[in-house]
Length: 158
Image (tube, rainbow, N blue to C red; front, side, top):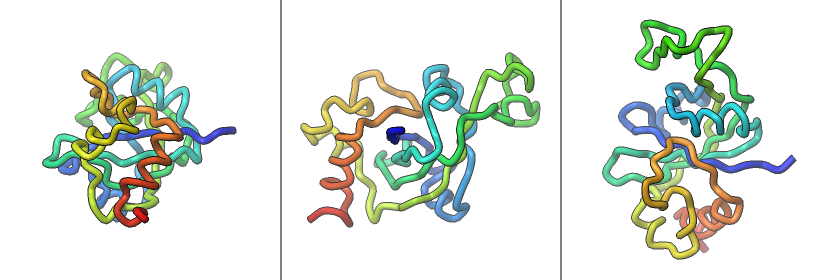
């Protein structure tokens, strides 16, 4: 089965690549967009890898890599009335929202900034740079993934 690649956005003030490195693993809670939920529920599989992207920061950009370690499963925070991610529209029997488990793989020595990505012609079709694209989880093609690793990660540049 082919591996899929993703870009997963998190605000560093909420949960950063440094937090994931410290924790070693986490589950990706709080997704409240149906298309992003569908990626989690229907397409993400153990062994898939994701760029960990710092959003709503200055600058924004790719901070490292995580690995998906579970199939999607119901988001426990959606049924917890004390959680900031509580959503009364679902239940434990009929969940609306899903999570996946992630483990830390690598933190890049420097952020690969959105500005750098946008300035790279080979990445002009990447979902991240498309006008109006704001999803917190986005697919990344194998060619985009490999190009970024080979050409934009500081420690991997030749």
